[in-house]
Length: 172
Image (cartoon, rainbow, N blue to C red; front, side):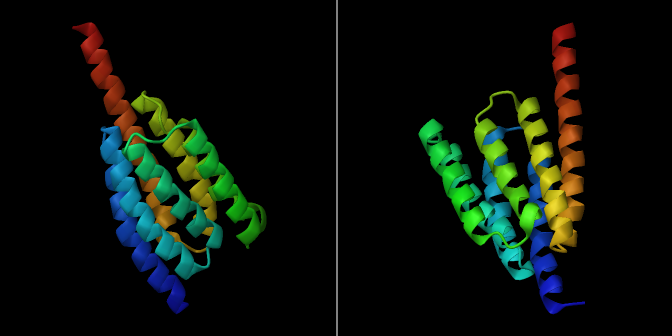
């Protein structure tokens, strides 16, 4: 096995553990902060594995998450983030159509990141992670692929718990 694949996946493992933790959280600010830490490590892993567009999108995502965490993310800044990610992806994409999946993910996630409804937000996360599953499979980021799937499952568990909690409140 190629040394880059081993190193990239080792970094991905640490990052992925943090990503799963975010999937279990129910506080949106904590989710965003935790995801930012995960993303920083994902940038390094993507670069090691040759996933240039993934690294680019992840770097832009860190800026977006920081702005969201500070409650500064507004429509003009969302637009700038989407244009920046789109421009850099178009310039540096080295994977054809697959290279655009992280871009689609960041566009959708950025548009909906300020949703107040945590359940709908988690559905957006699940959709974004599904796109990343395909991308990670392509660049041999096996650890991220596995943990993307686990994060999808943890988000589904959180959705079920939130809905059960809301049903109990309605019955009282």
